[in-house]
Length: 165
Image (cartoon, rainbow, N blue to C red):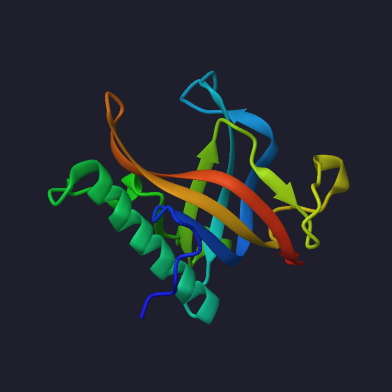
């Protein structure tokens, strides 16, 4: 049985106790081949598929992806390669994601950033860092435009949970 969704929006999920990687939470990073594209805030959630929390997170993401596909394409979604989906197997070439699942999320709007007590934090507070454990709120959405068809995750919030490497 899949875990109960926490929001009214079936495409919005709270990932619990994921490892924070490649965080750009306080300053947007330019994307594109020449790094001149729109600046976005972003982060990657590393999910351990062998833990109870990891399995629950994976179920939530699978359900949200299915809901986003249905909302965009009805019962005829396109077949998408794994690199066109925000939730996928981690990179076997990187030690931190080997054997893990990842969810890559970004947003042009700065996400909410909180400490373990739910208080707002800034970059100067040095609370959120690559390797720490966080809860992350993402909204899954389907893209179908001149840039192609994809399943993306919008980064809405990050809350510190525990120390990590």
